[in-house]
Length: 184
Image (cartoon, rainbow, N blue to C red; front, side, top):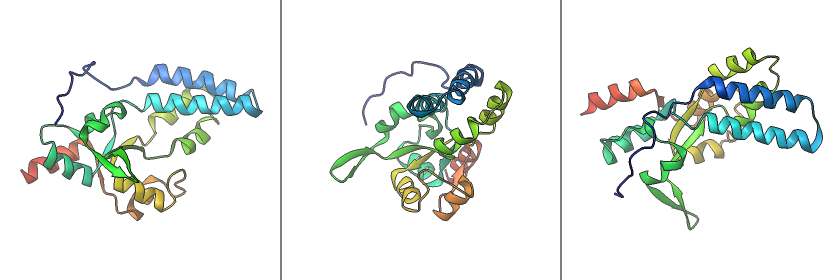
């Protein structure tokens, strides 16, 4: 395994308040425009959400848990971030190397944006953000299963239903620690 560099920050949790302020300002501009300008602002909202959610993940799949326990027993899969995911392995897909693990928005960003742009105040934005389902670390195969079943951009009956249909079991960090301790 490659030698890893020391993390730059002690915590990768992201504060909600500054991102809520940024999103609210952008949403106001989105709602005051149309056409191509509005499309570009929507893309900006998408990027803002992705930067906001790039901190700590909310869930991992059971398959991810098992792989970490077996291959990386001293590592916590809840510490995976987008920029370091490749250090946990790569797989060949159509002659292209891809990361073994995916950071997947449980509620697709596009669906979240649809709700978010209807906010009438900064407090509405904060409420949506506080209730956002978060990001889950999945194996590449699990992400492919979601996509194959039509859940890439829409999850009409919610993310938990989509995951159940695809046989993806998830756990929180506490559940992972309990699970890990029970099998060791």
